[in-house]
Length: 308
Image 1 (cartoon, rainbow, N blue to C red):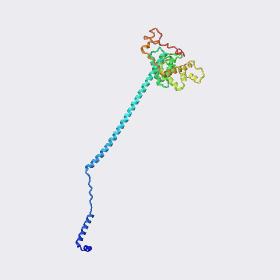
Image 2: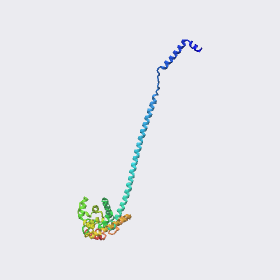
Image 3: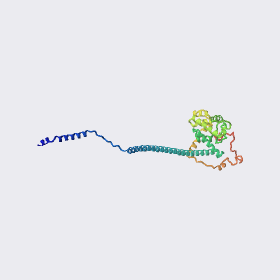
């Protein structure tokens, strides 16, 4: 019965449905438009500014770190320089203190060896000896002191029977070569000059130490020439009696000086106003006071006076 009703519907209703379905199908099959909505321009600008600020902050931080590192390096370098300077000052003070004690101790030994020299002269002789051994480091200042005590008793006008002259008793033939090697002119008074005699003796000893490693050989040639040094080395031949006594005497005195200075030499201060009260000294001069002359005779034999 139902099927009969459907079959009996009018044709116009069927056509209407077909048209509506066709219309919907066309609408669905038509082109579609996709709309993309863009943000505003200020948001992009703000993002760009933030990026730039971050880059600037990174660069500034890097520059600040470099400045801090440079400042730290400069501070470290400055501190290192200050520490080195302090060490140099401390070492310099220590060196000056040791040098002064050595200088004053040598001065006292010179005063004991020759009570006729003034305090100022003894200090000058010690300073000359110390300066010469600093120039020629192979020479021990105490050895040079011992040689001066034994050779002349630290008398700058001393002259031996063999014509050795001055503080360290240098022969004219040897002295002429040494003085010219030092760039000075030689004359008869040169070896009586304490400064030139001291430096010539230090130069001669330095040359001998470069030749011999044995101080005995050095002293043997210094006192008696290369022939005596050869006899001493070989242990044969007529070694000069003076040299035979001279070498052990200087070495013994050198050892005594080293022991005394190693223990800490007690510097005996002698005020300048007491200098004239020592033996052989007067305020008006030895001759005016009626005493013996302070200078020895030019022809006097120092080697015999030193009981060699």
